[in-house]
Image 1 (cartoon, rainbow, N blue to C red):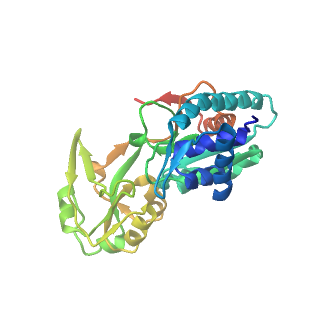
Image 2 (image 1 turned 90 degrees about the vertical axis):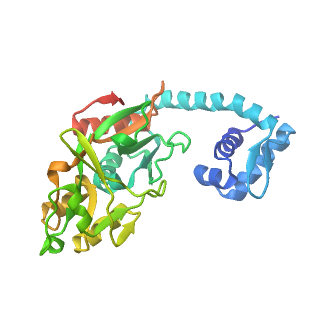
Image 3 (image 1 turned 45 degrees about the vertical axis):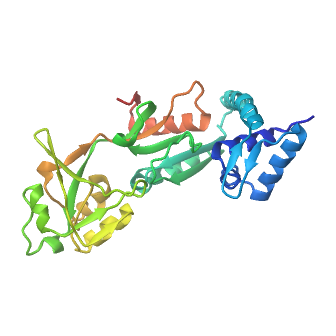
Length: 304
C-alpha cells in the first residue's frame, strides 16, 4: 500500500480547515482534485476519514487517529527540508504574512520589491487581515499588528516606533468652528467613526493625560469599516476622525489635516512583526527577519 505524501498533506489541510473548499484554496489546487485525493487515500486505507454533509466536514475516529500520527511526521519533514535549505546560497520557499490593513501599504509595501530582489527564490504571500485571526490556525508564518493586538506568547520584532492616536480634521472643516480644547468639546462636532470589521464594534475614542484615560462617546453622520475610507471624507472637510498619526502622516505633513487635542493623545507602543516561537524557524521567515533588522538596526524581543 503506497501512500503518497501529497495525499497526507491534503488530508492534514482538510482536517485543519474543516472544509474541502478552504483546504483546496490553501494548498492551491482545484476542489475536485482535493476531493479525489482524499477519496484515493480513503480507498488505500480502507476506512472513511471524514464524515461529510452539505454544511460540515468532520473527522471520523479513524481520521482523528491518522491526524495524530501524521501531523508530527509532516512537521518533522518540514524541519528536515528547512535544515537543508540553510545550505543553499539563496533560500527558497514560501513566506506567508497576515498584515493588519493600516500597515500593509504604509510599512510593508516599501519592503516587498527590495526583499524579493535580494531573495528571488522566495515566494511571498501577503494576506491583508482585518480580523485579527490566529496566524497559527491560518497557517501563516508571521503577522504584523500594533503592539496591543499581539498575543503575549509570540516572538516579536519591532518594525515601527510608538505612535499616537488622535483626532484630526481639515482646515476647511475647522474654519468658522471652535477648535476643541478638551475631549468633551468633541460633542459639538461631526465625528467620523470606524466600525471594526473583526467584531463589529465601534472604535472607542480614548484620550490620555497625566496618566488618566477618558473615553468620549461621539456622534456623527458617517461610520465606515475601512481605514482608508476613514480619511478621505475627513480631508474633504466632512468632520473630525480619530486615527493613528501613522495613517494620517501624509495629510498632516502637507497641511490637509491638522491634529487636535495633542495634549490628550493616546500612545500605542509601536507596530510589530510577530511569529510563534519554534525550534526551527522557516528559512524564508528567518531571512525576512534579518532583512528587517538590517533596515531598522534593532533586535527581536519578547512580548510583555
